[in-house]
Each structure stands twice: as C-alpha cells, then as structure tokens.
Image (cartoon, rainbow, N blue to C red; front, side, top):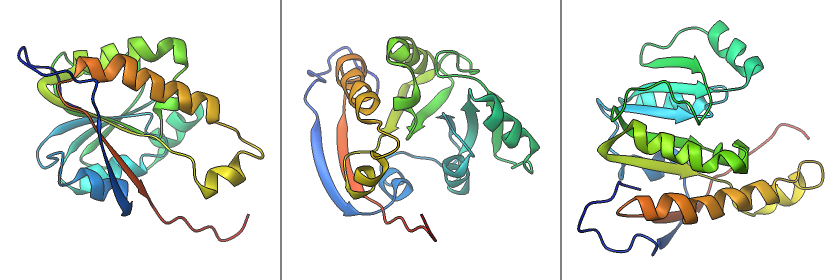
Length: 189
C-alpha cells in the first residue's frame, strides 16, 4: 500500500491476484524496491524475513516486542544491514517519514486488536510520503487445518484483515492483495 495523494481515487477497492506457488520475498521484490532502502520489519521474530530483505539490499530495522525473542536476537551474530530493537508496533523506533517500507510478515495478527489503529497510525508516521506498507498474513489452508487443532488463530487473523480494510486501505492511495502459497516441509510433527 502506498500513502494517499490529494487527488487519489477511492482506496477501498482492492485488486486481488492469485500467484499460485511462490515465496513472500519473490512476491515483494518486483513490487517494492529494496536495494539501498530503509525498511522496518515489525514483529520480526527470529529475523528470517529481515535477512531476506537485507540480502536484497535493504537496510533493515527489525523490531519485536517479545523479551524472550529479543534476548535471542541480541545474542545472535550481528548482521551488517540489520539493526534489531526490542519494540512493539505502536512505538516504532524510527524517525518521522524515514522508512521506505514497513513490513508485517506474519505478525499483524499478533498485535492485539485494540492496538491496530495505533499501530497503523505509527506505520504512517514512520513512512516516507511515497512509502509502502506490506502486510503478509496467513490465510486458510491445509496447514491451518492441522494447526487449528492446537493453536486456533482464526479470530485474530480475521481481526487483522478487518483492520487492514477499515484502517489501512482508506489511508493509502493504492492497495492490492496477492494470494499465494509457499511449500512448507517439516522433518516430523
């Protein structure tokens, strides 16, 4: 999503594209310039996606509010293009208008629903005037059917989707939805 322009059309219409089997980084690379750009990975977890962004030339501010994950990230070997900060989505440690892109990679649904408005306002504060918000959220699929048996995230995922449509889409001049699936394999259960 890109921020609104004064003459922008209604941003509530969202074009949807089915890309089949691919990866998140392969969806992003042709659509969001990364080389030489400053980006924020919100809810970065173990920073796997942050590393992918950095591998494609971005300077990454990786943030995660979980103290256990933050301790693990601080103990990990430093990465030259990645800075980790323990922080949440409602208080991004970035200057106003400094980020070329903000990513929520499988993390917006972990932000409590009452905080969605503050988190998305914080994203807009941190983004440059032509910056991009990219939210990657899991959809229903075979893996979710198995996960639902012991970790049901349907309600929080639905809340994240509602907040994107209600709060983010009207604040940006352009919104697109890309549906795809990525192969996942586990050695055992």
